[in-house]
Image 1 (cartoon, rainbow, N blue to C red):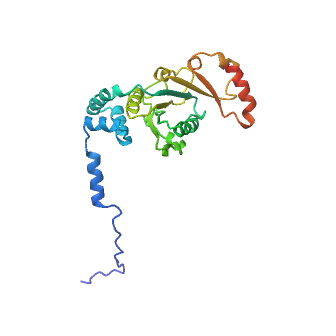
Image 2: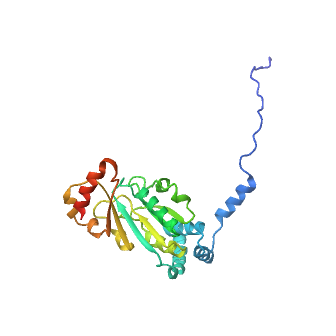
Image 3: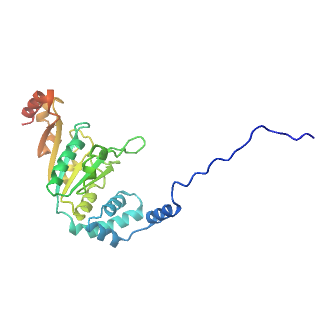
Length: 249
């Protein structure tokens, strides 16, 4: 019987070194799986630890019953250290420039020695329930500021422009030592006013030329605003901004 031969020859290549250290990967895995106690959470939050503040907000937003139980204990311990900040709500229609405005405003505050926390609420899809959570990408300078903390959160099924656990997140940020809390709502219309009850100052951003004089006398979100800012009012929009200013006075 003739032995089959082949012209195909396999030549082993040069083996590549592992890109990840097994020891480092194991350490990361152990650290991630470590369950911190309530005492550890509270003490670190009161010391201003951003990683523990972020993890605590994640627990608060979780639907896991064990996470909720732990989050409630943390909130109860942090509550006596809260209510010592200025809370500012910023709202407006999609595309009005909320994130850009907040970055400029936030940098101004941090330059004055303030500690600023931004709770940015991102809309959730009604189809797949997901959120992009990309507001931080528009705050390139503020996100690297050591005196600022930006936390995007999905709105979920909550209506009114905020997330279900925004109030609880405010308490945790105040306990962590932030003296100015800015809440950026999802893009809202005229009736989403829930954020008004959470803040000390309610700011509404508008775009010049986005409506007629009737907009100035409509009720809802406009009558609740402590101030109205006509954004994007430069260049060729100056005239329209002046008209809008008169309409909202």
